[in-house]
Image (cartoon, rainbow, N blue to C red; front, side, top):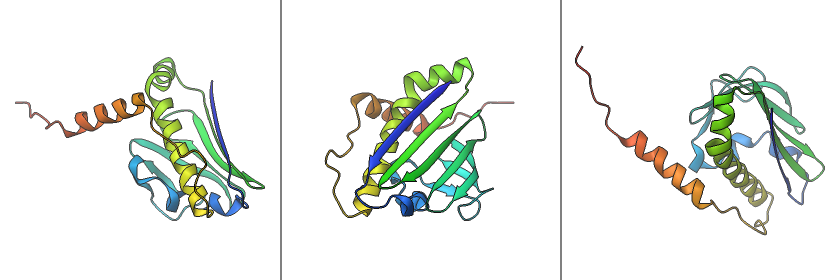
Length: 155
């Protein structure tokens, strides 16, 4: 079982930011897109990560279930605090991928999102997120892999 939690005190009521997740999504992490307006049943995600909205209470919380893994991630508000919680029951291969690659990218993405929320709340983050060397290296490797021309095979 994997559980990953991020919180940020925005200094203003956090509820309105739950429904703005798409608008405030950091562009460096791939556009967050859905097949319909954000709400229960909307399918989409960002980059290779796919999920479906399973619960949405405007101003309170939104929950997404992964479509290719067993788990959820929830963005919720309580007072001035915005919280993101990922819970997953992944197979061994996925847990290893999480430990060495995905967790670091996920954490950087969430901190970028929370920085965007804090700026939208009218203040600059006290300690803006910075990508670690590992995050920069992994992102560079993924970009290089995606730029490689596909070789056609004779068939």
